[in-house]
Image (cartoon, rainbow, N blue to C red):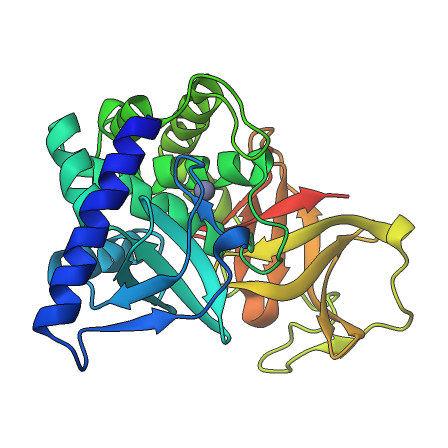
Length: 319
Ligand SMILES: [Zn+2]
């Protein structure tokens, strides 16, 4: 693996030098960030200084398709860069996906499937959507597994088989765990779990149909018509929190489920009730959250939140 990476770095360097000499003014620019805190797909270290290049149209298209599969609008920039494989980062409040064009081409050729590159990009997007790039702590095994699971989920939604979703990981991951990355066996399992969960879509939508979004829920604070939110009478203490709700579309916003069955959003430090939690009679999807404007969210026993079409909205992290 390390031989492959060092020879890859050499190739990437050659490409950089070539591009710099041919298009001196605008084809590349330095990316003055500290690469220490970045996670690469297989855990290999990222060495600066970094340079960003315009992405290929094909890679931009893959990212658009990934976001389409999870129902999100693109909120990050995709750049080719001199990274060992691919990385997610936030710089100057802008979310970036960096990838090595050389690596993407090579991994697709090695695995004989274009899904390999898709799964790597999906993994990096998964870091952004799960809020892993908000801190400076760098990579952690649990974060890697969440991003792997997301990639499995997305690839099934895009039409890949489980084998195709796992192809890149089979070829690239280390067998042994490292301080930042879990062993290959765990990462393959995470992809399989995500891929399988993508098939649960139909079930979630069945539960949500029992709670049509035209239903009136007069007892619930904050959902009457277009009334935006109801302030909570008291601040929430940690003991009252069932879990933190992380929405894929806005992972940096703070939402909590309380033991009183409320969905609470923290707005400028003040808790606002924005939804109500009710029990459903289905063990696989035990809770339903009715939010603002009677928006229905179904909570699976796995902690994943779905909308009424059975599409993933986010997840609940237990307290
Ligand atoms: Zn990662």
